[in-house]
Length: 482
Length: 79
Image (tube, rainbow over all chains, first blue to last red; front, top):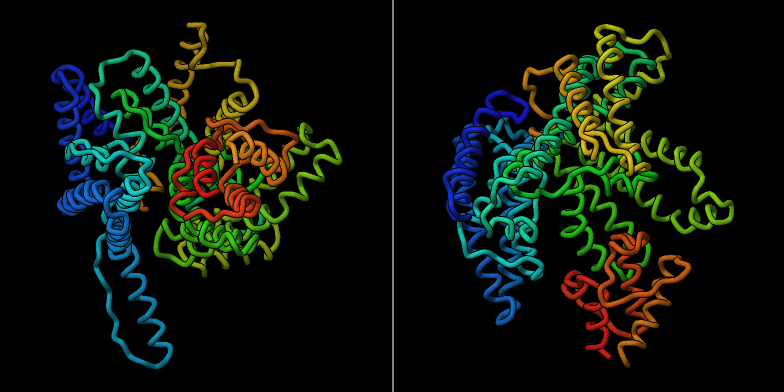
C-alpha cells in the first residue's frame, strides 16, 4: 500500500477521522494509531509482524533497564546498550546480509577448489527493516547518552517504532523529538492539516511528474546499457540522479505531510541537495535522517576514538562512515564501492578545506555567484557518477556502463524520450524554481503566500499539472527495497 | 581557573581552528550558531581544547555536550 495510491488514502481517511473525532486523550489516539500502523505493516508483510512486535518489546525493556542503570551502574548500562546495538545489527545482518555472505563464501571456496555445493538461502527481507532497526538502536544509544528520556508507556514506544507513514521508508525519527509529541492529545488543527496537505501535494508532484516520468526511460537505458552509446549514457546518468532525488524526496514529503495532518512533526529528510557547493554539504542535505543518524552514532564515536591520529584519524572515520551509509542500502558490492567513492571524495574535500578558504579569501570569491554555481555543478557531477554506481545491479554492470563511454557518441536513444521533454522537463524546471526561491528569495511564496489568490492559483496549477502530466498508477518507491 | 577565563581561551581556540574572524561564545552557543562548526571540525576543536587545557575527555562526555556551557563545565571539573 504505497502513499501515492488510492488504497492508501482510503485507509488514511478511515484512520484519521476517528483519530480526531473519537478519542479524548493521547492514550486512545496512540492506541488507535498503533493498531492502524500494525494493520498497515501487516498489509505489506504480515508474516514479519511478530518480529516487529517482538523486537519492539525487547528494546522497550532494554531502554528502561539502561535508564535504571545509567547513574547507579554505568558499566551495566554500557553493556545493555552494546547488547541492544548488537541485537539490532544481528537482525539486520541475518535478514539483509547473511544470504550475500553465504553466496560470496561459497563462490570463494569454489574458486579455491573446495566444493561447498550450491546453496541458496531463502531469507525474505522484511520490508522497512533498515528503518525500524535504526530507530531501535538509536533509541537505546540516546537513552544511554541521556539525550532522550525513555518512556514507560509501551504503546507510545511501539507507535514510535511502527508509525505507519515512516515505517517503510523513513524518515528515521529520533525518540528525543518524536516521543514527547505522543505524550499530549493532538487536536484537529487547520494550519497543520493545510501544511500537511501542501507537503503531500508537493511530494506527489515530485514523484508522479518527475521521478515516474523519467524512470521508464532510465530503466530501459541502464537495463540494456550494452546497446547504448556514450551520448545516451551521459544523458541518462544525471537524469537518474534527478529521478532518485524526486522519488525519495517525494516519498519523504508525503510521509512528513501525512504525519503533519495528524498533528505530528517528523524529522526532515532533504534540504535542496542540488544547491550544495561540495560533497560534504551535499551529504548534509541528502537523506538527512540517515546521515545524521550515522554521523551521531558511527562517525562521531569513531572520530573521537581516532582523534589522536590527527587528520588521518578523521579520514579513517570519514571513510568508514560513508561505507556504513553505502552498505546500509543493501548487500551488494556496488553499495560498498559507492561508500568508498564518496568517502574518498569527502576526505579530499576535508583535506583541501583550509586551502580552499584561503583561496576564496585571497580572490574575494565568497559572494561570487559564478564561482558558487561552478562548485554546485562540480558537486552535481560527482554525485551523478556515484548514482551510476548506485543504480547498477552489479559491479560488472557498472563497469560495462562506464565502458560504453569509450564507444563513441551517436544519436540519443529517443524511444519515449519525448514524454521526458514534454512533462518531466517543465516539472523539473518548476522544482528548481521553487528550490531556488527557498535558497535565495525567502520573501517570495507560492503555496504559502499571504495573498489568497496567489496561494489558490499555485495550488490549482500544481494539481492541474499532476492530473495532466503525472503517472498516477501508484508506482512503488526506489527506497522501499532498502 | 574562572569560567570567564575558560571562555576567553575557548574563543581563541574556536577562531584558530574554525578560521573565524572573531567569536563570542556563551553558555547557550551550539553548533547551529556557527556555520563552520560541523561534525568534521568538532573533533578538531576537541583535540585543540584538550591540548590547550591539558585535559582528556571520555568519548561519552564528548557526545553528551549539548552546548558550550556543558563543555565549559567539563573543562572546569578537570582543572
